Amino acid sequence: MSDRSKVGTCAHGDSSLVRPHFTEGLLLQDDDLTAGVTYTRALSRLMFRTLFGCGVLCGLRVSPPRTECGALKIDVAPGVGLSCLGDPVEVPKAQTVAIDPCKVEIVVDQMLWIAMRGKEKCCAPRTAICADEDNPSTACTRERDGFEICAFTTRPECSCGCAPLAPPPPPDNNTGTPILAPAPASGSTTVAPPPSAATPASATPPAEEPPPGADTPCHCNKRHGENACYEKFYHGECPCGCCECEWIILAVAKREGDTDNWKIDHSVRRFVRPVLMRDWVVAQERATPGA
Image 1 (cartoon, rainbow, N blue to C red):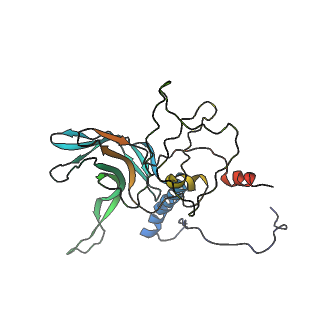
Image 2: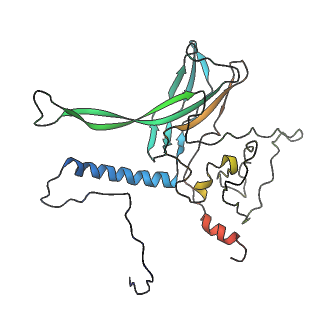
Image 3: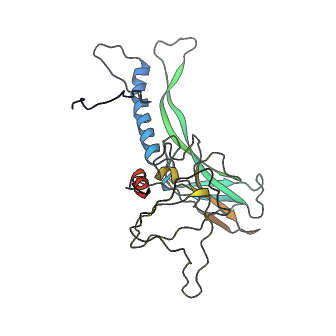
């Protein structure tokens, strides 16, 4: 392609991705072979955290806490999460988190935050060839991915998740269905302004949005303001509202008074799935008068 139409000075720079390049007759060292692994991992991390951010990809449903053999137990279904770095965290089978009431005091209206993070461990250690016979050194030859699921009395600091939603409105006495605000008309081009630090957050989080109907089949989450855990993602900003933290919020459990009844709230988790959406920048341009 001809560059005759090129004007001005171009900007140049380097990406954070580096891949190895092998040449015939070149003596390979350990960092050369490791670079092939780190490149593919860095590439997948970049794509995952850019496309999805962080959160729960599938499964990982939390059951209400139950008392068994004097301990409080919380069951978590198998599933896959995505860390803020872009690493998948797989839970291949159901897990149970146990809390000993003799060590942790469960108070009235107790809240328990259930969160998960990825772990790594060294496996298959091997002694290096020509090692010192008097003091042979070993190095791991494999790294296995793992996970850790814990319960907290307060939300972990800098964790990937959303603010809890308010309970849904009470049902209508005549129809028995929740009273919801009317949804925007189909085909509407109204675009919400981008988040601003000067915009005051609402005193209470909004109720759950009405489920999509025949005219609004998209299940997109449109949280704004105080609950803007998806806003940067929809606006195409980098990073997509994620920080370099390790914990992924799965749910929050709340005790009802001084009873054995617990309620689970999954609105605090950031659920992410692939979605084909319009370009936010184009929508913003079309919403500007005179565009």
